[in-house]
Image (cartoon, rainbow, N blue to C red; front, side, top):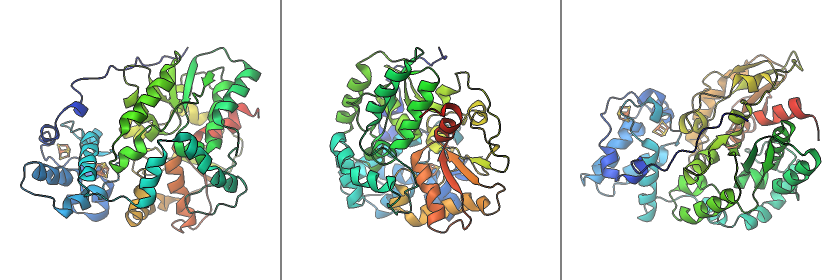
Length: 410
Ligand code: SF4
Ligand code: SF4
């Protein structure tokens, strides 16, 4: 049995329970967060830095500024990468403050997300409808006919859900090890289901019992990112879905979704990134399968800054069977930021371009960009389709590489 963390109790002293005015006073204006902030690096504008945004929000809170459009503008410019949190010596809970401010601006009608994002945020409250509505997209993608800059190629099952697939594989393989539940995610299950299938295969091949609760719903990250309310119903649904059985852990293969769900399930069951969980099992290094290929590993912000995980474990990367190295700037944001690449495409592309520049001359045939978050995969893929990088390269989730290397079963 892997050494799993005890679920943290919901902390009454956590920032989420403190008034905004109090949280904003924590910043001592030292500026140590500036160098890690992608929007500050991009613009050199103090208002586009964590310190600048905190100052603007504090001025509004103290009534020095009132409904100033500049405040909305600079709030919307933030990628939500959370890189400023671990950089801060005063432990300013930037993420919690940002969520609160976004929510207040939305309530006051000051923030205006694009219509299709608002529609999608409503749809996540009806997961079955969401999955049915995404069926045509899933089928087109499976047939290779879905041409969109963010739609990396893949072969998702059109009809079979991850839940049904896990039941089938559990019957066939009958694993006896730790019992986990899997968070499938709205967009992952709707469009990129092959990543969930790969996760199930790798876990079961490693003797892990996998349940995918059918009644689970959106983790809440998407509407929360837009500042929308009504997260309680989503949280209640997931507390019931993941509390219906005794699980050793709930696993996620998307760091943003895992981070949101960990808040919902605090004090109930640990929520762990699937690669971290797998690193506690005895995965052996694999022989190199292609001497010429090279895997460059990128680290999702919500994994390293949000979940505060050191990175993707070496044992996992060694088990992919590729020669690998960390991508240059691996700990910096790629500019995807949940919905940031849809809301602020120009900024997002510039942030990506800086990070992706190395690919032009990177060694390897093929060159593979590996990460562990589907939203980052979409962003990296757009570097190809939008011409940010001119040479071909593949974009893969590390769980897919493990699947090919470790299981080779289905
Ligand atoms: S979350 Fe990221 S983009 Fe926003 S202020 Fe912090 S470092 Fe900058
Ligand atoms: S590092 Fe922390 S205390 Fe210093 S300016 Fe940034 S948010 Fe404020």
